[in-house]
Length: 384
Image 1 (cartoon, rainbow, N blue to C red):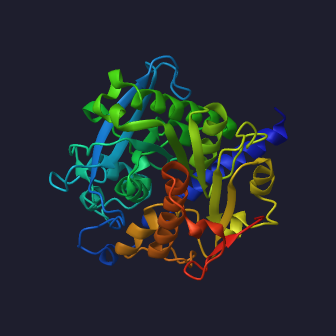
Image 2: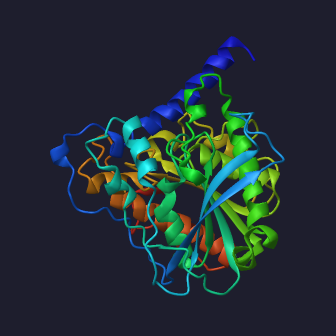
């Protein structure tokens, strides 16, 4: 690797991390601006009640790329699924320790109580008995340095529509991920300046394939495995998690469909090996619109030969496709640099990602994906 390419890679990863640091929820604000009311994620539009189970999975066949001395690659996974009923204990958004770590990192300790963030209403029930049936599986990979919980609203929405959803935390790549026994490993990758982002992407792809192995193995996950239709598996991710979605498809033929939410691809020749499997890219227009030479969407799109969509959202920011703006606005901390409201960003994410997986994993026709519509004027279609 040349000095110039090493600097370039360092710059890209630093930009990824900088984006995570400057999220609106984590900006400085006086304590008086934070309301005392409880936080709540958007209610899902699907009619099914949702349960959630938390799994600790360890891949002992691999060493951890960030902490080689660790005993295998540890992953925390939140599994959301249609439940028998809406009764039971509400599933917490995150633990107070996880919330405190996140708030301390961003300078909001003492401004936003950790209990307020941790207690966000998720519209899921902890360990609720699953409803019977065979379901498509969708895996979710979060952005660099942020935890899987930032994709909770999307996970609950997809589960309420009839999917089983696994949100994955990639060990040592996020702040505030609690492991069994109350362990809170540091974000080792966040402190590295020599990281090759392609290595991050491929490592995440290996993580996601391992999670598929575990979730579809009845010896490992029992009743959950019996719910999954292994012929209907999809992956979506935000930021570098979106790159991991495409990389997982290239490496694992079990994955039938994928979505990138506002992420670059970072891997040379991204899109090769996908064949005719469907893939959708949706992101902020300011970054991912045609003609922007700072991103690699155009060249990646041209390598996709099956069903494909390249969508951009006017006024969106990098985190508009996550829970963060929705919660930030409830806290009185909107991002003044992002015109699109948290509510509108959520509605667009819900509608387009939900439509994509309903079409390709459940076989339900989705006119929304055919082209521009007056109900979603912010969404542009490119290279149809």
